[in-house]
Image (cartoon, rainbow, N blue to C red; front, side):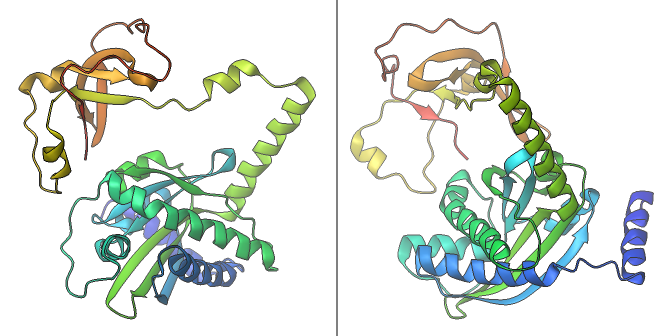
Length: 317
């Protein structure tokens, strides 16, 4: 055991000894139970019964251990820079996907597999609905706990990647075990929410910035620089007949040129090539290294990109 682990264990023991418990824990657990069951039924007609909810406080350095190594990892964003995280275990993730694709949860053992962006897109509506309903329940109650306002932001490769994206702070950790589709399967969901005092500080900072903006007027440059921009990386361009594309399955393989990784293109809205470079990875995350200066966009018709050379195949999970 490292010195960091020993310090974390000592902190938890000290908190337990002095009875340092959040008086609003019961309200959060109750709100989470109701929100999860309602969202699953409303969105997908999925019967979900929450069996147990474990809640505890964890430090930033405990995130990797708490979340484990398997399942779908999600980053949550909120107002004022608030951040949290969520993980579906393989059983829970596959159950929600099966309900959406075949209309039922298949009984039996689930084989763990790497989660993809498609998985994240299919579960994101459930995440947003649960978080929104959870906040609404807290607002309706008398717990006095401030809603976090978190929503799904992006998929993460693993718990380590999430830990690097989250602030060095304390979190409320919830582990929810639920029976899905009348007991056809049991799944687990882990949720990390920022601690009450830290969320309040973030909201307070946002309020201060809003008052400053109201007094001085909007900073158009800051607004423009903070606007989201979507960029894609194109590895190669392929031409395929329509019947071949319609026959794509989860195990379909496409033969891409070997030099694709080293001659990738960074493409913006409308298919404009912004830059060229090399696709690789850094610290477990996908990375794009520029191989030269940004390119001047070529003139195209509005809403149309450059003519395809051979059709387009983008990097996928």
